[in-house]
Image 1 (tube, rainbow, N blue to C red):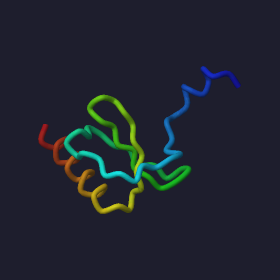
Image 2: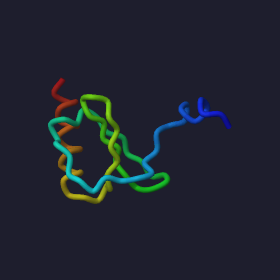
Image 3: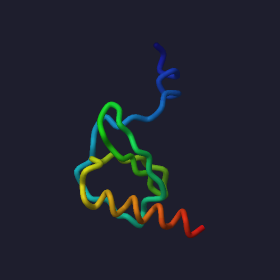
Length: 72
């Protein structure tokens, strides 16, 4: 396989960050079950950061993003 075929594939969470992120800098998220149960947050700068879905701050960040989306 060439390198170009790999970049076409969907971004998967292989490593999970354990740091709490600044919720205000997060603009979007995606839920992932494969290869691990995770949330991929996307920052205003387009950076994708994967975190464990079961952390308490992650749930409040998701709520905050959903509320922001609904307000628009």
